[in-house]
Length: 124
Image (cartoon, rainbow, N blue to C red; front, side, top):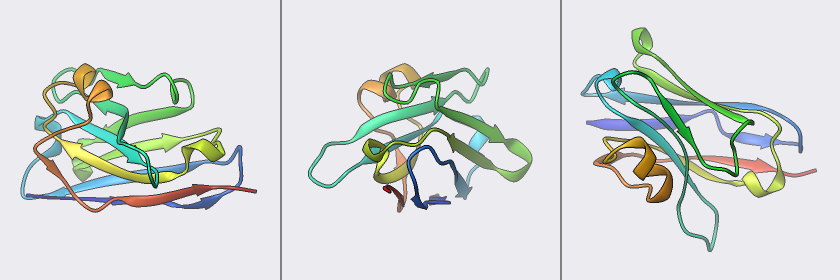
């Protein structure tokens, strides 16, 4: 089982990026999938999660209204659309499979599987 996050980069404040999380070895739509971020010297922050059952979503207050998590089951991919980016969104973003549940993931971003993250840098 492997997860890989793609799509990071450098953008100016107010810009957008779309991150992708691809899996190998299992089917993403069977599981809850979350994204967390970690900036240098800071702890992990759960930012978004989508359930494997009904597709319900959860977001941290810091990104609600700006980030959107979605899944494309045909591509076995989960996306994180990030709009209205701010300098404080700068971090390395990781996707995680099989958290205890999505609400818990936002508070404590842990899960059974995660891989290398992708760096997002927001600066002018």
